Length: 199
View 1 (tube, rainbow, N blue to C red):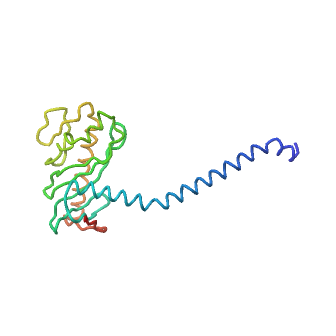
View 2 (cartoon, one colour):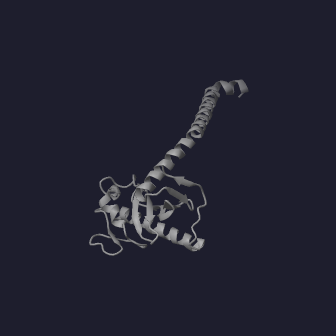
View 3 (cartoon, rainbow, N blue to C red):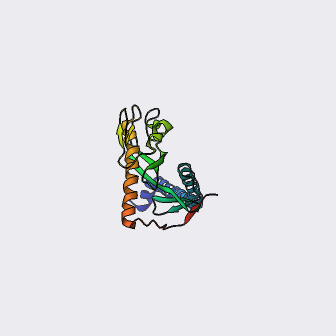
């Protein structure tokens, strides 16, 4: 088969390949450009959301990043507590939790940042106050029970024990990370990044 007859036979295929390749290159360039011009705005929105979530847990005028997961919170120079963000595997996906720990090593409160993949009407009920408010005042190693919680226990969301355990695992992981950091830092918490000041 000659080159001319080959291209007559397969010319349309090569044209389609060239067009598709060009389209893919243009789309990739457009996505890269869009990502480049929006990444700062996305980071700003994420920071604002994180600051809002932190200030809902502990009121302060400074949130000092100790690590990428731990923030120390002060108000007028007085230590109010620490905030640690962790993630645990839930029923439908990852559950992201922000845990506020007092200087006395007790839970001030928690904020469930993400549980969107959990079952609506069941697992997503973990984002309701009657579940997450149970954590206030508890210490490390919180345990989930089906009912009749006492001491360092919390009652699971009805029909959503896996999600309840995921939240509890994230909270217990926050204590673990925090206590390891305290041991490594010799109890001298020194910010490693810029301070976020709340206006």
